[in-house]
Image (cartoon, rainbow, N blue to C red; front, side, top):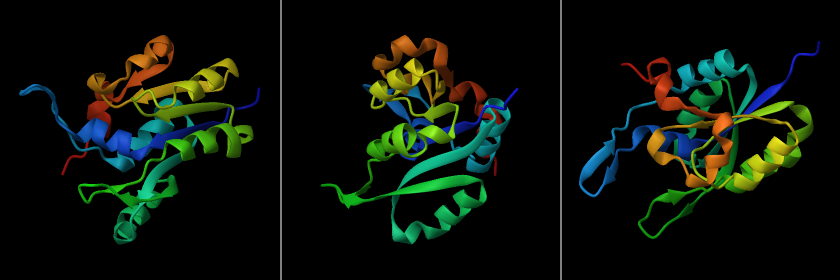
Length: 172
């Protein structure tokens, strides 16, 4: 029997903010952020989901070249998005289109199953398409509080990273 080829498509901003950012409802904290260890996370993807390639979609900022080299050394295939500066002076590199293009067109014939790391509803039509084609394996959502209500019908595909926090958290 042929071994299935599984690829991961990771929205780096969604993963990073979904794990590290504190979330509030009013003034009450409803989620306390923590620091992800990207090397442990890559190992986790391999061990738990048999990921062969992990594509990490990230906004490109020249001064972050050391970070990019580190992520590549952890085993990620980086896909860069040019960044722009928002009204607050922060760099912005929305990778949604790149993830859809890579998973539904560029890499589509190269994998049997796909794992996505993102808790928002931006990829709803992509998930529907890949589920219909029997190519959607999992949707990894960083925490319970950042899940989009649009993903309700994908209950059987969801994995919440917060439940495996001890396996992927950075420990100094």
